[in-house]
Length: 190
Ligand SMILES: C[S@@+](CC[C@H](N)C(=O)[O-])C[C@H]1O[C@@H](n2cnc3c(N)ncnc32)[C@H](O)[C@@H]1O
Image (cartoon, rainbow, N blue to C red):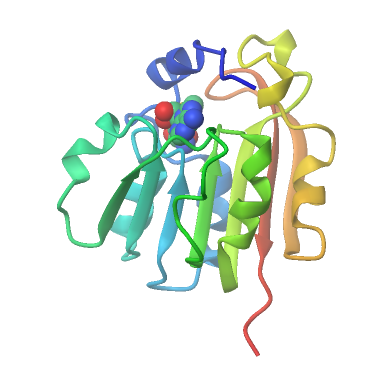
């Protein structure tokens, strides 16, 4: 599969970029992430969620194949920027590291869903929100490779994480879209 949906870049420019505030879903469930624990922002873009957690006192790891939007964070204490193409089929760039929080917004690469779930450390939280099938009627992304199937986030965490909240909804802001979103907790160690 190849990411042919170039207009994803346009989304970055028109409403999902560094200037955009954290997603309301992430804001609502950020408190699930244990205080001071490291947070992974997958496909971080401009790092709006990495920045949010950094401001809350969490060290952050921000991963993207294009880290230009994170340049101003480079070298800042508590920030690790990982430039990686997540869609090559190569090794997961974070090895066996676990995170108190894993945030994913507006990104889907189906083959790495299991690795994303596995990156949630015991007691940690996954907060994930992205476009779902049906979004094509609103515009991009419209490629089914980049759209969640019904219940797919629930399926991804089943048996691994406890679901705190889940929605499969049409939203109006920052623009009309169909999204699925989940907040889920990994069982505590021991
Ligand atoms: C729509 S943006 C979302 C950015 C951020 N998560 C947010 O919500 O503000 C999608 C991000 O996925 C990144 N991306 C796309 N393909 C990627 C790949 N193959 N490997 C790593 N990152 C990728 C893009 O560079 C972009 O930053």
